[in-house]
Length: 306
Length: 128
Image (cartoon, rainbow over all chains, first blue to last red; front, side, top):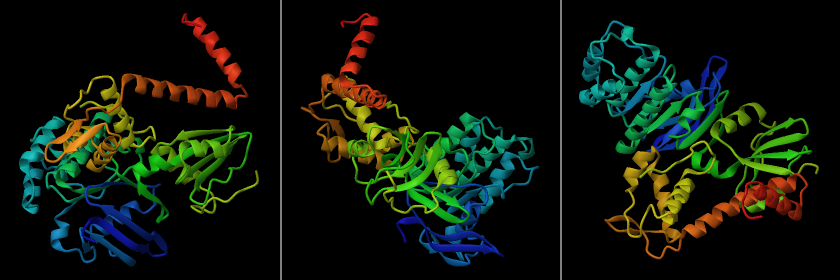
């Protein structure tokens, strides 16, 4: 387990009759950033809470930094940083007070780094937390966590309320931290375009289940949008091609495919002259999976009528 | 080293780095024996995983464009064979391929495409 920052095996968590996380098997290598995507209620926050050792899995196991999460050993708790909706410091505290509080609970807390991060967004140390805008609060919380130099960082919608330059600065800072300390991170967000730049791995969840998990570079290499004008089906592209999504727009059929082993020329030749092939960005891929997933998802493609 | 990368183009980042460095070599912005940024530095500048840079450098080495010298770094190779001409030809070839694919889809044949190209070139004031 030790070369993985996070590993889950058939992980499940029920809340009464609701299955929030359903058979999740996932790995995150050290030094990588995982983008955890999915609609509201997909199970992202439950997964993060399991990884933090806050809730017990109903079945299956989760390992963080080599140790099971339940019960989570103290040295792992102190090596994991989390920012999400559920952590709000006292509103009356000034940034200096927050700095003192954090230094009191986290041995590894680097005051100079925290101050530097606050200065970067021009946040004065005597500002009470309550006087900060939503975006400034987020920045403060992320800074408090990064300054503890955690080995695993869990960020639940960290950029919520931040303006574009603050979002850019936050994600750049996260990438730098991960690169410099061989740390790892999981980021959940609905603003996919923001994180596509810094992500290494992507996992897409829906109703607690994993729809797709892959290195981002692999997806860039293998996922294509194929538009077939005047057609409704896709020619056979081999056993190693799967259809991630399909939608009919008038006379044009649009398919999102993940293929393996075919060169760009072979793909063109097999699809024929009526097909247009495009690269796909992560947001398009996410929407294809979320909204246009075929009923028998992730099955190898079989030849339909031609 | 400034490299323009389009993170949302769907093109693998390592391949974009390879192409960008090839272009810099071909256009003389990177000279023979010039040292490239270290893996760590380039990953830091581009805000990407260092493994992506390693993959790009390995591909460039495989293509004979750079050499990795133990303990010294990565350098532009001598006799790398990449010339402005070869890069220019490849770029124009790709543009032509994309255009031809679209034109064939619209039902044109080679002769018609060539005729239209000549006519358009004529309008732009270049040699027919």
